[in-house]
Image (cartoon, rainbow, N blue to C red; front, side, top):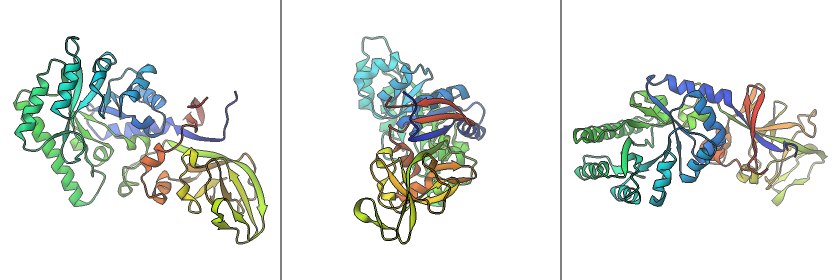
Amino acid sequence: MKLLKRTWADISMDNLSHNYHLLRSLVPADCKFLGVVKADAYGHGAVPVSRQLVDLGADYLAVSNMEEAVQLRRSYIRLPILILGYTPAFYAEDMVDMGIRQEVHSLEYAKQLSEALAGSGKRLKVHIKLDTGMSRLGFFAYDNEQTLDQIRQTADMDGLLLEGVFTHFPVADSLDPVDQAFTAAQYERFTAMVEALAAAGVRFKLRHCCNSAATLLHPEYALDMIRPGIATYGISPSQELTGFFDLRPLMSLRTTVSQIRPFAGGVEISYGRTYTTPEPRTIAVLAIGYADGLARCLSNRVSFLLRGKRVPVVGRICMDMCMVDVTDVPEARVGDVVTVFGSDGDASIPVDDLARLTGTIPYETLCSINKRTPRFYLDGEQRMEVLQYIV
């Protein structure tokens, strides 16, 4: 069937390359790069993004779960993959066979993984997760002899091979001195525990703690590997850091005009009659709605770009459509491309703007773009690949 250009996302691989080299330039040349491609590469398409990261020279990839790892392996992506979340122990042998690394967050979990491999002669490469203040997964990385003993026991297990150790910073994206001090304290806890383990004979090939924000603001914490997520996709880790670095967004979300009609004043638009034309207006119907990932709470609150001009959404956003006022764009025609966020010539709408209006962060907005929205991968203006989830 012919390609349907109803609503789609343009993904700039040029910008992916730019962001990769920018992040690499901040840390020593021998520091490894782990590309975080969980959650379908933050909505950008895990397989095409991973392939590009491989070509760029990334050393590792990270996903959230086993299914995401299998997706990459089935696409012939051979870089080492680290699973950042919990995987049931009965997958341990599968992980070894596929060259997948697993985070380990407790002695009990380590025992389960090792026992699952008993008698196989196989060893699973793992990365020890230290909790330095995130209070999520992990061994407590404080002045804790119990933790030291538990990790020593883990290192002695026949089925496991300790390759890496890592932690996560929850407020590295904040410029508040209190938050900066907290991040520094986390780093000190992490390195202190790693040094104590080394003194006990437990050493790691890879120590990593820098997410996007820490890579940008604290490259001195890079150690052996960085694992930037959102910055790889050209988005600042927080509003505070917007404009500090030349990050270039990969994704622009587009849709098309389905119909244009003139309305008299006093006409109510869409469900709930929440908008009434104050005077004669020209209204266009767009082929995008909340089933595509456009939050319904943006109704009557957001504007898009049509022929380089802002056009406001009027009335409630529907499941598959929404309406915009195009009175000030008399040249608008059915089939015209409308930019929901991203660039349109010299004009642009940052995804941050939509996130802020919905009371969330760009991460969620990007991950919410529905799977019925195809992704077009661009090298400059030339389309390299199309990812369609449905057909």
